[in-house]
Amino acid sequence: MTDAADATALATTAPATTTVDAGLPPRLTRLTFHGPLSEARAARIVERLARSAPATVLDVGCGWGELMLRVLEAVPSATGVGIDLNGEDLARGRADARARALAGRVEFAEESGTGTARGPADLVMCLGASHALSDEEPPGHIPTALAELRRLVAPGGRVLLGEGYWQRTPATAELAAMWPGAHAGELTDLAGLVDLAVAAGFRPAWIETASTAEWDDFESGYQSDVEEWLAAHPGHPLADETRERVDRHRASWLRGYRGVLGLAYLTLVPVA
Image (cartoon, rainbow, N blue to C red):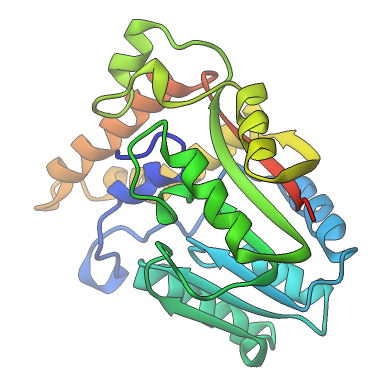
């Protein structure tokens, strides 16, 4: 894992090929959102963002862009662009948009967010994807990503940032169980994260954090497809490799970052 602040990047260890017909486990079908986000919190966020009536929405590191699609549903005059490097997630987003009669109002583009010229937009979303805006190593990635978000948001617009922080200082054993090279200095606490947003030229209009229940639902949903596949296919040629991967991820979660790594959802307003 290259960016601890990207809480949902923990899913990047999933196999690239996930076709059920190929005898492999399906990928992330139990997840509505690619991160620790409940239906109740999503509804509140969408309602809050819709009040500013954005005409244009940009979702950086969008995955399949579920929250962006909900904003477009709430603001019928808005158009959106989601950018990501995962073609499979983008295909899921396009299919979801077609199913919800939104295909004419949204584009899913397979491209990097680093230095993107897609802005400015009235609403810029970056949920667990600050690594898509910065090549800096932690902890420098967060200020760089915030500067990019400030560049990409239109005057009077809004930024929705989902960013990692330490809920408490991780113990040595917890760091050892996390991603390779994890260290206490790569993230701030919540107050430090908000201070960085203010220093980048924002005012924090709303500060909220994912709950333990939201994290548990996300992590369980992330692994559920693979766990059920392993139970049903213990002798599959890829079972050992898959089992080792999912067991390693579960140990990283339960012995490492559970209750330690937080995810903040910050609604930010650029200072005029």
